[in-house]
Structure formats: C-alpha cells, structure tokens
Length: 138
Image 1 (spheres, rainbow, N blue to C red):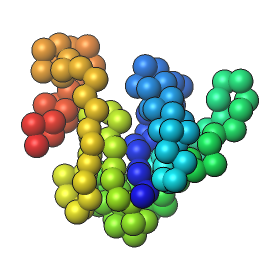
Image 2 (cartoon, one colour; image 1 turned 120 degrees about the horizontal axis):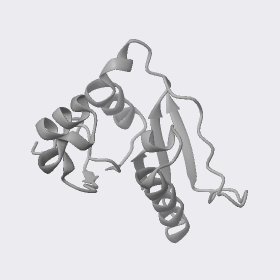
Image 3 (cartoon, rainbow, N blue to C red; image 1 turned 135 degrees about the horizontal axis):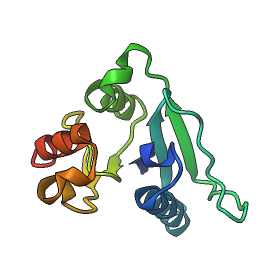
Image 4 (cartoon, rainbow, N blue to C red; image 1 turned 180 degrees about the horizontal axis):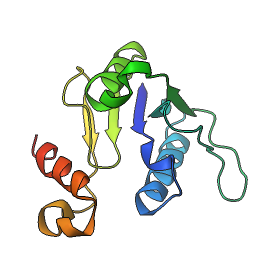
C-alpha cells in the first residue's frame, strides 16, 4: 500500500503540526515496513530533510516527494495534489493539517488539531481562518 501524507507543515521551521507530521510519518513507516509512505508537497517549497534531529536517516520506506506543479501551483489542493495522487497510485492520503483534496477518488484521513478557526479566528491569519471555516465542514 502507498500512503501519502501532507508534508507542507515540514516546509518551514517546525512548529507543533510540523513535529507531529514528521514524527507520525517516521513512526508509521517504522511500524509498517511492508507499506510505502510518501510525504507529498508542491515544488514551490524548498526540498525537505527527513533526517531526525540526531542525524539518523528515515526508515527506507519513507520518502519526500516534491511534486512539480507549474501552472497548478495556486491550485494545489484542487488540481495538483489530486493529479499526483492518481498518477502516483497513492492508496490513502492523510491530511496532517486540516486539509485533504475534496475530490480525486482516493480515500483520506484528516487530522484536526483544534477548532480555533471557529472559536478564536483572531489567533490566525484571517485568510487561513476563512479557508478552514469554509473547507473543514466539507
């Protein structure tokens, strides 16, 4: 089975969600060596490093995939990612930070860390809060 995970939280200095995504991917890959795990993110971000803080390499069945997006860059969740999931034959996609493609024909898992976009939207960028309030119910 090929399991894709949203790697966008790993494209910047790790905060709570970045640490969660990193550790989850490494632990899942170590626990299920027969499966392949792919941390997926668009090419508008710099390459990510999957080595642990102690320098240890990731499990052999875990890789980072930087997807060339070209003109689809602004439409990652609606076009670029679903297209990659189909082409890469990803069996399951895990949205590690509130988001999964709304279409694309692949089963998905979604992690919701909190509901601050609904109860404290002032604690985040207004654009992000609006996007979460609109997309999360879908």
